[in-house]
Amino acid sequence: MATDLTPNTLVNVLAPAAYAALGFDVTMTAGDVAGNTFTAVDKQILILHNTGGSSYTATVTSTADAQGRTRDITTYAIAAGVYSAIFLPSNGFVNSSGKITVTVSNTAVKVGILRLP
Image (cartoon, rainbow, N blue to C red; front, top):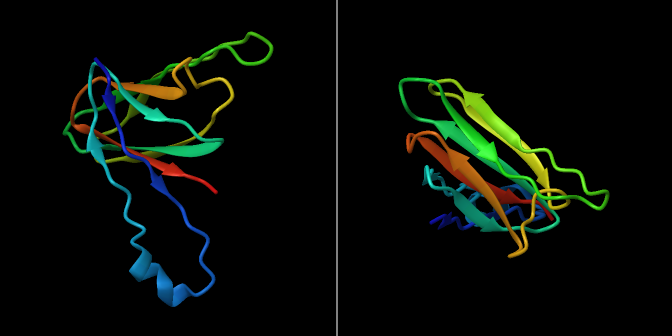
């Protein structure tokens, strides 16, 4: 059973002094080898952080786009200690439940979502 993630939303801010008050921290959750899901918006960035001592992988499951094409991001390698960011448009990745699924090979990979305005 996939585990739901809580995305963070990037807010447009005019005054740089307000950044600290808005809390731009991204909530990172231990990845689930059975899959994590999150409700998709038009544009989002998937953030992966390998906190383990070995290289691990992540897979983002695709769905058919308007032309019927699919293209999973399969076993994307993340070296130990590395952060990775993947831009995910909703087209081609949102399943019939309105969610995007990411599966990691080890729970040492932390997963976060940043929604773009």
